[in-house]
Image 1 (cartoon, rainbow, N blue to C red):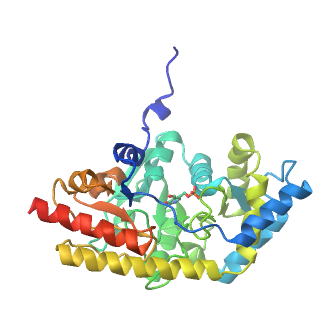
Image 2 (tube, rainbow, N blue to C red):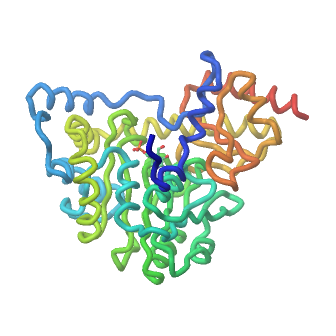
Image 3 (cartoon, helix red, strand yellow):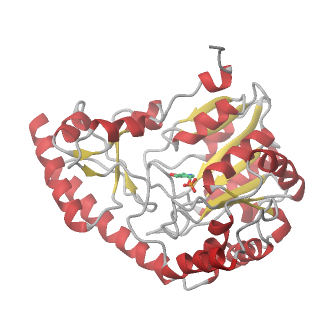
Length: 373
Ligand code: PLP
């Protein structure tokens, strides 16, 4: 058999899957990164209608249907106070593809990409696949990423840095001042800021702001998706926005690798973005309630956990052996080191599960913690 590219050899299959596979069938799964709610009915129905009418039988425009891109532009005006031209949007196969084409279009071989550590696993992998060099930066005590740390990590070889707020795996939310600073850094150092905003609607304290609001040089691109906001992870629909020249370059990658995002998903996404937004608020409230239950549980166990202000993850500091002990007792959690070296000594707990199951899992985590004392 022939060999493989060095880029792909630098990447391994995500450790998170291995954790699922190791756990028994009856395990309570607090390892999943997806909401446990149904996709809103109006989004499903729009896809069904589009299928029945034959509207989805052909390729759409490479960037996505104009109607979807108008809906995305209207969303940015409504939620982010941003004026985005529908021409400066590419609908992608989830936020994942948006991250991929952003890095592929901007990173040259050997160039560096700065991102949070612990951080979402794709940043490291997609940097390697683009031929770049990952440059993870450690986080503040509250698990937010300090603009100073990003600025200190930037060298002449830096192509881009990634901001993720609210963040996976930490649940941390960056302040508006941080976001302003990230835009300034992108401008002053002339590097790309990729802002991954897929959890923007899951903010419990503070507010979601985008570095794009403060962008004066066209050096910020925004990655977003319907996945987490509308519980549409299986639909695979995200998007990227940015300056016209950047969109044109990213389209070159998207056009040849993907042609266009799945048409049924585009119709569902358009309906999700333009239809009633109550499901988004309902999910947020459910996540907030569960977060509080989980934080009370950690406090009772004596585990220190920076208060996650968003997303649906918590990242407590845990004693050595804790993750294995919890998994052995039938609750799947993810070891912090799956998200980078600085994740060691932490665990990621996803609370995208109903409160009854969450309480059961808390009892198991408490037993595991006591057993290690
Ligand atoms: N960005 C972050 C921070 C994520 O956690 C995820 C998914 O877990 C994604 C992007 C990718 O989302 P999608 O499912 O839309 O590809």
